[in-house]
Length: 267
Image 1 (cartoon, rainbow, N blue to C red):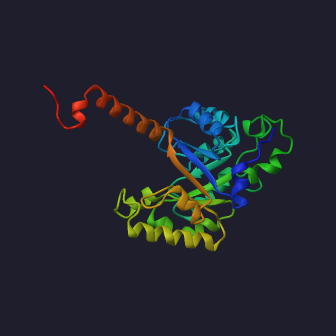
Image 2: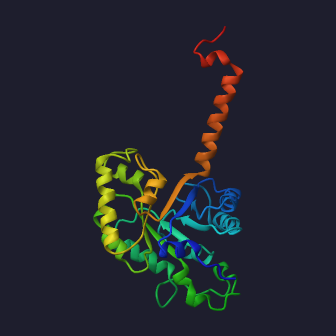
């Protein structure tokens, strides 16, 4: 069975898509997010744990519903990109792309021969349901969603050229690393950062490519959708669990020692 890329179809139609980050490497969280009804999950192998096998397990779990699995890759190493696509990755999110040449190299690694350098073993790979999809070769390249991350001032200056590369489907603005690249780490709402984001938006929209980003200081996911971004991930499995544990332990401390809440500890 050939699974159509629902996220790519939504993006092409200009429909908004909400998702979340998965940074624990745990397939159960991928399954839960999909069942809950999110449009996509980002399996983070740049800042999270896991290997190719982890990615496959998480993709299988997310496929229980309509969520599309996006793999944030740890690097642009061609062999790993090709293995991920053969393994059935529906979308790749590529961090720290700074030039059009880098973007073209990613596209080349992911496209099958005649259009790129990905080897032809479709008749045995998971991407074609192990050869049970007879027309996979003709449909594979168009079904894959390739997203480049703009995360540095240098990338902003090259944003139009990166977005113009044939095969780049979307540009994802990363405000956290962007702020760090200009010496303002963590200040994602600073005027200087906002100016770079606005410059990127203008450049990318000039070539007609859609945009994605994450919430930042002064911008909620709702506001970002209202501003025209069509793909926004918010929160993560680790962050949601961390915040829940922090709240639980705070409740426990208040229950265990009520006097501490008032700032008076009884000896």
